[in-house]
Length: 73
Image 1 (cartoon, one colour):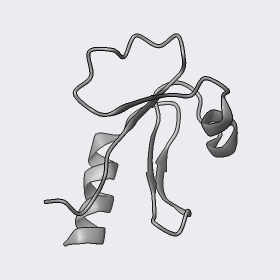
Image 2: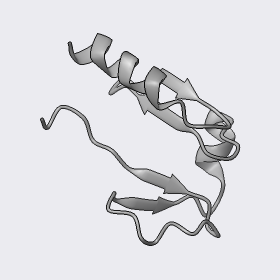
Image 3: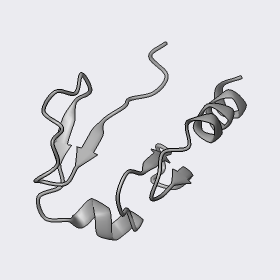
Image 4: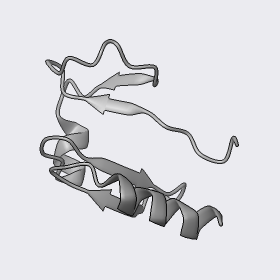
């Protein structure tokens, strides 16, 4: 509903070209280092830069949906 911007941030070699999301290649590894991302991960970064939600190493869709429901009602 226009309340959140979603991007796919991928390793330079990740096969992610078929995504419908805006794609950002983490060519320098800066995002992965800053957020300790390893493998498939999901992060909700608040507008103030803080991490509101993190699921590292796997994508926990149920936990993400629960977080978003609490955030946006």
